[in-house]
Image (cartoon, rainbow, N blue to C red; front, side, top):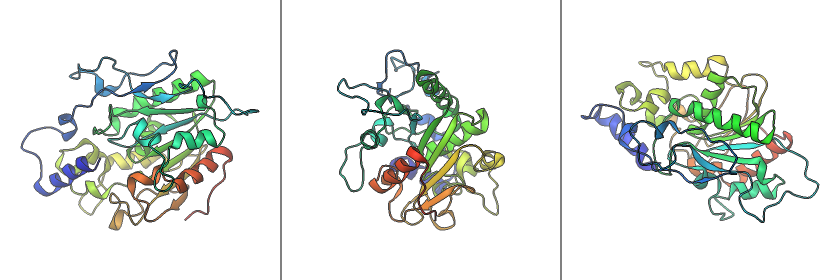
Length: 304
């Protein structure tokens, strides 16, 4: 992720690249991993269409359901709303939510949720950027994310799902709510999302060299971001779902200075965890415990 954002930062200094087009078109994603039940339907990944002929399977990646034979539901399990985990740019469903658990800075989120009482069939994660390390933007992923969530609902028989999203995943989910409605959403955990823009995109969206910065450049005296204005036009927390925002106003390099509180959503419980940084915060033990309790029974922390 860092190398991509450094490229964007360089663009901000030198202006539009000599080669025409957006930087997202220069990095072709590799095919993602997939671990799903054989009868679970996966949508086609928009990035696997057109010029990307190397994928053997054009569908999105990720994991979900029971895929290890020894996994069982806890005794006396009461059904819970399925949880859909949505990673940020240049991550994937494995690196973001099933990373090794060192017990301090990062944990295996899927295993922590299993340990907290979820069934394997209630945990799902999409890889919408292709394989890990590839760059993308919001609009190209909205329809496939929405289709994935609808397929989880159909497969599990759930009326609504809970969503945990990080970074770009937050604004992709919110754009899906803007485009497709949000009756399918019960609880939404939004971690480190550029809801009012990201510092790294300041001055970049205006030069039209990056799709994602055209979407996520913060407003300034000389620039008003129509994409963000449209995203927030239905309200930052439309009625119905419950909302929890987790962010870091100090250590997150993508939200500095006037953008330090960009991830906050008006009407949500906004929890500031300073010093957790951008990538670790979504899978840090403190945050996982907080949003695990919220998903389980609606418990909220003391909001910032």
